[in-house]
Amino acid sequence: MHFRQAKGDLCLFFEPKFTINLTIVLRKLTNKSMITHIVMFKLHEEAEGNNRQENAQKIKDLLEALPSEIEALKKIEVGLNFNSTPAAYDLVLTTLHDDEAGLKEYAAHPAHLEVLEFIKKVITDRKVVDYIS
Image (tube, rainbow, N blue to C red; front, side, top):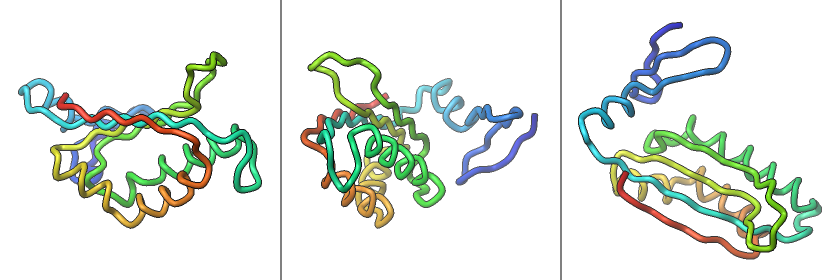
């Protein structure tokens, strides 16, 4: 276990791959709100030379690389769906930001916009929710 600053946040690292972002924990304990951004995507069966599962994994990999480039992105989680019902979406993105300005900074960041260019080519639908957490 060790402490280290990561993107301006104080983090507690446990081996092999477990991290607690103490800045986020302290915000929750002191009731300082943050912004949660959730996006669900439905993908084409095939697009850009890949099947749905391959494109979902590619999107996941691209999105999970963003925190090293975008300081306003405090936390990211990308989940691949395993539910086969027609109402299910293929992929969900959840991000956490200090405030609305941080969400806007993330949305306009060139690295994020580059990922969006690929996403737009492979999705059929998306749903978005932003809320104060």
